[in-house]
Image 1 (cartoon, rainbow, N blue to C red):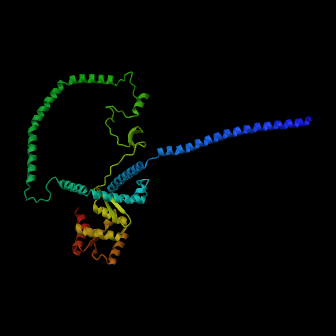
Image 2 (image 1 turned 135 degrees about the horizontal axis):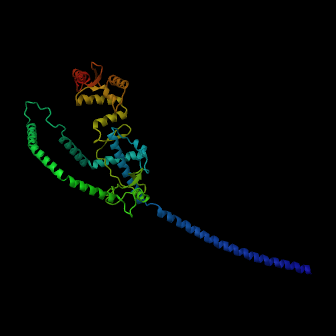
Length: 408
């Protein structure tokens, strides 16, 4: 009986404990469910809010377009500046150079930028054609007005030159006037010396007082840092802004700042400065079209003839180069073309290459007007029978190779 009661009591206690455990587990599970739901809502809210924050930091399409346009503008300005520098050094510029020196914008490929520069320059010069022609005309007029000769050149002595006579008369008049003023200048000098003797003692006293004042001024005040002290060195680290500073009124270009390097103030690029729009200058940039690419040069720094020769040399067509050079000298000057000229820049041909090119020109039959002549000292010349007769070309070659050097 007691065992039955005990067993019943144990089972009852177990039921009670089980119910309590189940209720506890249910409460924990409920709490976890609430927390899980809350976390899920928070995570969902965070996911929804995060893109909004990122989108707010991303540039708009208008800002991206403006940045790309500025990069293209500055790249064009740098390209044409480089063309001017290379033209001054007698070099043509090809688009293959731009990726090598970092001029291609990040959002463009080298091929895209090559076409972009060509089309932009073509459109710009077509729109500003009248302005460019007016600039060329002004330069030609200015060059025509400048004369290097200080007197008449090439005028026979028997023909009177009234302008020269007037200049000589003016010079004689100035010389006479200077001779008349000479005695008076001597008298004035003597009077000045006597006056200087009287005032000598006064000047000595004034000099002593000035030296005393300078010594007092050089002594630093108690409130001022002595020269060479740490406070003084700290003040010297930055350029002063007052009127006594050598930097007063200095206009620093945009995108640059002053920095002291090894004791000297220099202009350096400011990495934190906003990009600056550069001015594009391309009015006098010329284009030469080749077989595979194009070439650029500045016509104010390189002549059209030299640019043409450099273009032919770069295209690596020795036959066309040879024929054009020979015909141009025969037509323009007129004179035969010295073989030695082909050894100079921009051709830089060797004797073997020159001779081989001549044989190719002669044997091809396409250039029957190109002939060869040789001076008595062995120098070789070429000429075109379109512009020079054979006898005349031979005499000019002899004069250039033998007679002219002997007369110098």
